[in-house]
Amino acid sequence: MNNSAATRMISKIALEYNGNDKGMAIAAASNFLLSSNAEHQFQEMKTVADRNSKVKKWALTGYISPPTENTKNLSDEELTEIAIEALHKIGVTDKNQYRLDIHNSTRQKHIHFVVNRIDINGKCTVKAHDVGKRFGEAVRQVCRERNIKTDVEIGIEKKAFMLKNLTKSLKGSNNFEDLISEMKKRGFLTELSKNEKIGISGMRIILDSDINHQTERQYKPGYKLSEISPTLKIAEIKSVFDLKNIVNKELKASSCLKELRDNLHQQGWAMKVQYKNEFRPNQINQVQDIWIKRVATTTSSQHKDGLFYNKYDGFSLSAIGGNFKNIEKLINATVQSSVFPVSSTNENVLEIALETVEEILKPNYVSQAEDEWWKKKKKFKR
Picture (tube, rainbow, N blue to C red):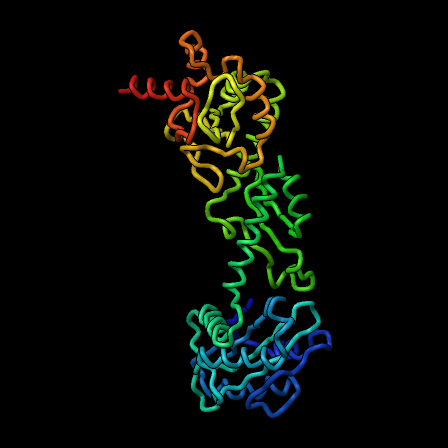
């Protein structure tokens, strides 16, 4: 459950806000307050707070906002009980004054509280140190005790759901505009952040059903990309788009696999084909995947690992939605024209085609000639 708690000095306005909510607030609970009037309640609290002159920020204010997943099955009484139990866990006692109000003017029901940290005996029972963090932990503990999903658990589920849809959307996109459109079809709002130096620098993904325009400023919805996945970076997404566009462009300009390899290398990429079964020359072989990786000129310029990219394998075209099928057609269309020849006459052609492909993880099955090329390359380096 989204929640907040902070110590502060307040005026009667805080209590008036709690009890108003555009005329839709419901008084949920109060303790050691004689009046129902906000101004009079403030005077009662201030009188008690003055019994402890050492504490300046004598009020504790905050809210609990259950997600829509919980709101449907959570009554006002249960929400009030959760709030009071959580407050007790951080030091509020039966001798502290407080007022709790449920707000319904927005789509997402939530409860606000104003608590006097000074009890009627003049003792400060609620410590200010890390009060927001401690209150959040208390709310989660109460939820677990009641078999209610916590905000952390719901957050983990939502982020996993977002990542699943993001990867699927990336597969069908060639740029950020496509990605935003694909995510929208899946029920997500994608917000991009930019800076002058690198352009698009960040991303926030929001589930449409979580957007509450009436409380958008107070409760920032969604998650940043770094919160959804620690391994998927904006730079990697840009690389995916760059690679897919380069492959599409060079595929149209290439008449055979060797030409495609050469063209991709000129763009800074090396390609390797992985077959489903053992390669057999001069016949159609079923392609399992096509791996393309950056050609690193120096160690420092080597591409970093990510969600899709591995420095040993590169990108899997089947995983990122590259033009895999059309490349497979090109391979099979030229399979008898010495793409992977076994004769010594054409070994120089193979050497040229694969010259720049180094340090890539050897796939399960490669052609015999390509396998021999790797062995020669390894022996030469010794």
